[in-house]
Length: 134
Image (cartoon, rainbow, N blue to C red; front, side, top):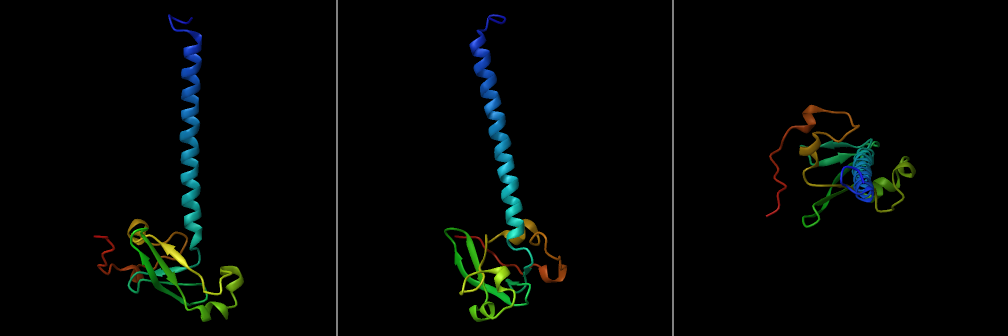
């Protein structure tokens, strides 16, 4: 007994604090890792807000193809023929349908410009588009 508290209670409380600290640490590490992977997913692609389109490293435009409002995901895709004849295809995608970029509707508003891409202020001018659902 330590100051009227049983040793087992102190050990259990210490273990609970330790486990909570480990859980918080793992959660922070997972969030950091997720954010890093999100940054590299579209690396090399440039987003043009005024056209609501991406451009690949080979210069092909990926236009908006689908919008899933329930899942809050926008799909951007180039013409399949362009990807299939591209010299960079092996480094980009294995799909015969072309590369697909998936973004949430507010990604440009959240981050301004996709990370690791050249920032071109003129191409990111606001266009007044409202992605809200409802």
